[in-house]
Length: 343
Image (cartoon, rainbow, N blue to C red; front, side, top):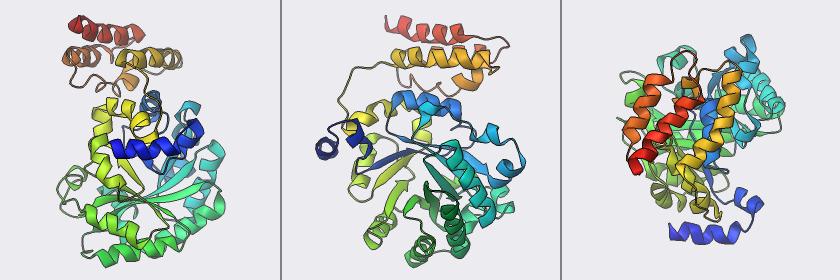
């Protein structure tokens, strides 16, 4: 990634410059995964990745425990709240709360294909109603001063042409959206499960590249099938940013190299054990507040991916962390399994 690093070196001579890198690197919103414990852990690995919450529906915020859904740790910033919904007034209320809570961005989900979101008439099915998305974005922008963005697919069931994708983006842009995060696959709303929709529809990166060519003033972030930082290189020569999802979750150490490779931060020697040491005070605090150990450690199971002793590390955490009263010593013992194997 020498070309990326050389360009960034000129744009990232200090911390503030690296934050304003010409590229965005984002972690994907993932239900049941990218919660506040996961995001705190990820932030220890990278200072400059933009972290996205799980999708939160407007109904949950309006009628549920708002603090539970919106609370995050100050260390997590820059952070984006992803909303699920289609009613412009409801989305505007939630966007206003996102700003009040301190989020840097509010993102509208137009890409999730699950039955639950289809029944609620939002998610990927909104790609068939670009005018609704346009009006929702306009209402959200009128209710807050933070960035309003949209995450979507390249199409759904009946959408077969690039021109239909352009129509969606162009119409939504009329509402004031300038940042589009594009999962480079179609979504089949009937016949495929959410998991299959992440794997079965073929990737079509050239359509996303064409969007950047046809809408050069917009920020286009590409998502889908990107596994490593090396995979990012060809995309960053075509678009403005990349979003990693499950690959970053299953092998989070990839984020530890991000700041140096994409944001020009000087390389400093860090080890996985350093990350655990930095995480332990957070674990102790959360345990004191009633959090169960496995609610945190399930997000760090992949930290030692492909390292000798990783299986023993994962096994100990899987067997011990869920037990009542399990403390931070369980996490320390799991790390010791790896260090002993290395010794």
